[in-house]
Length: 263
Image 1: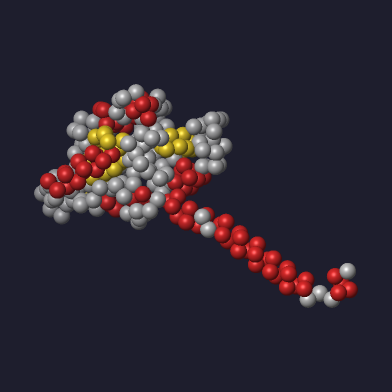
Image 2: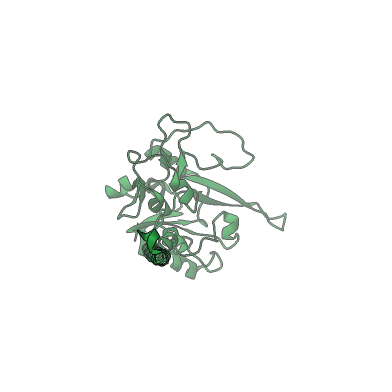
């Protein structure tokens, strides 16, 4: 289980993108020229040089006299407790650290991209334009955590919409906020139990559903690797049964052969 976790309180986010800029700066990621996409999202999607992206959601109101309401969601790796990318990687290029981060070693990577197929949140991205491509995603600032610092994104958050700490404390804090303001929050901590739990969790406003925010709510609480293990654990038994069955068939068919043919 993760030692550390991060809570994103989406009711407090003001869409300043400070977390997005801090992520770029700390990880020395390339900046791209902005362009019009008919939305406020910039860039329009996660990409190899963007580990953390802010999504803008407009909530239409039935009363035209009321001002427009915008809600913001961070799109990034959730650092699963039992990561599918780690289970899918055949060379252990992805590992889950004791601190909670899911980290990637490009020197071990063979470019199979199984991690991209396995991730239920479609997070890992590939450097398609590089002559020596790697898989990229949020690192949970494991290097900063190792040095006793918090991740760059939570460090710069102006409104405490992003907080970092011990996972158990973070979950307790999230539920305390829901209990204190039930009319403000959805009665769920996204990531507490989804796909076995994640190190990055979210609190959502009551005005907009998790689905409308873009969160997947069809994943269940079991981790993806647990589904694979449920099948793979039966392989030895199936192999023994098949071998025994084939031996019986071989014995029966050869027992019925005439004596001359046996010689």
